[in-house]
Length: 387
Ligand code: PLP
Image 1 (spheres, rainbow, N blue to C red):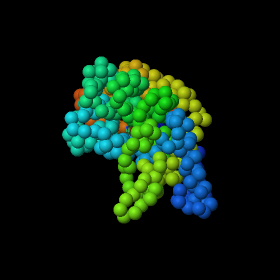
Image 2 (tube, rainbow, N blue to C red):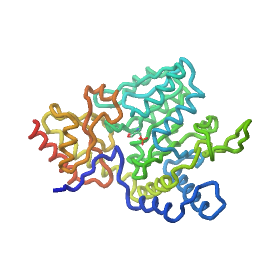
Image 3 (cartoon, helix red, strand yellow):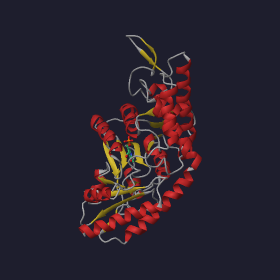
Image 4 (cartoon, rainbow, N blue to C red):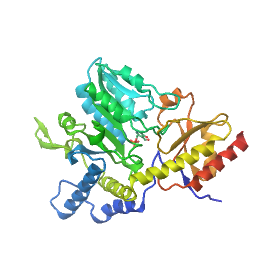
């Protein structure tokens, strides 16, 4: 018998509300045209919908202007953009870049590649047994060689919410810019980039109940103005001759080629949807689910929760003493429960906690207490079979 789906893999990607699907489809059905280029009505309508999304996003994170909002393919591309453009221009031999042990590979590898190219050094803030950044170690790492800090706002593997404001303030006291990977934070915490005073911030649409293949890079306008383009092509230019090219103004300088127009419109719709419900209501609901689930699994024999920070988003990672996470995932799948098992693109973090992988249940706004019960009952059955 097919069991009803209990979808608890929201940290990987979220399901899409009908409103988002309709808005995305509506572009293809009613206004499909390329943007910024045509004088015809359809192109103008598509351009307006696309640019309206940019304003929705600007307001959502309280950026100063819409020229600070760059559409990218997602968090990964946003970080690569900053590492390539800002990094290549500003990082020199012997410089240091600070990240943390709990970074997703997309906030490790681009900096590692940059360091290899520039002969610079990657420094890593350690985490404690609860899965929290050890702030005193950050204070020790930061010095006159430090030229950039890039930190995850909320960890996809542990759920930890990092003290990013404190990190930014300390880095700024040394005049060091800070980038935040907000892939997991943006759908749980209200983000105000002006209040945070971060220099760059990245997130993906698909973790925010929006489409895949679209994401955002926020950057302070003074940085973005000073940075060279990331890619060359259509739309990012002002004038092209074979001798020389001048570049378009922000944000178009960083948006070469035809973007994911439907995706951008869908992302705007997702934010409208979320704001109607209220991010604080979503966070409250997810926290209840997390607390309930954490308590329920705590009694299970041989189960160790990986990530017990004081401040967490709705992510519950765990490891069974005698059952491999892949077996946990496969067994739960038979029960209709979708969780993620593996290293969650955080291999160094798995090494830190001495586990090959974890099982991770992550909650979204549509999950229920009854669904958590299905998960916990599934885990109890696993213990009966394997235990
Ligand atoms: N950073 C974090 C914390 C993530 O959880 C993810 C995705 O899981 C990413 C970055 C990469 O996001 P994307 O694959 O959408 O670019």
